[in-house]
Length: 336
Image (tube, rainbow, N blue to C red; front, side, top):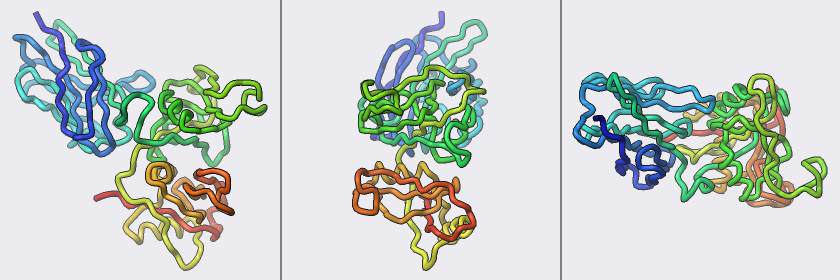
């Protein structure tokens, strides 16, 4: 008889830890961006993995599965963005542990290890989450996002794409709740990764659920992912490069801003880059600058006169005419 999978507590990254939830079905792995991580999966007992099929997939927010790696004896293949980054550890004939190198923000989520011998299918699910002591503690930042078209213009698929374009993913409920606990107050409703629409309020007031309502997350519940339109809450993890304001002798239009960063061996920064630098590195600059989505913003971590006098925040100027030569530019140089 084929034995059940069990948890193998093996790690590569020193900052990573594994927490067993159910030794026969599910574990959690916590890691930081850029780590090399292991997702444990073992077959205990006399049966071995050799000659049988091992399939690792990632379960997406819409419950579809993305192939990560398939192994059949000596034949192994990694797919998509996991090519050259994913392989099996194989410390012995019963080990199907998956290794993923250079962890990216898009790698976080739930993975499924499936053993198939022709007669029996056995699975283990592993939740890969951002490093933290619990689900409310994470190394990253949640930020609200709406496109150039204005508020409430994103269906769920558009929301997923909008976050990805800003070096982020759609935030989970736990991540938004953690940010609300840290003081995030935002009156526009946005998509979360579970398909619900919510928004965080720390200072109850009439336009945001009523002045008599308690502080908390206002929840619209599940919405039609194709036809409903809202903003989105994005989550981005720590930076793997340098975010900076480029000193220029004159103000730039958008195309000039893009070229200026390229000329410095960098790219024009994304909104996620700015929020990560502001929240996680304390980046502070009172100069409005172009970002990759065509918006103009500036990050203030030390409130002062003429520079967000009442609160630390990423200040949003808007989506100005790209031909205007009124702003500087923020660049991002990825770590080589």
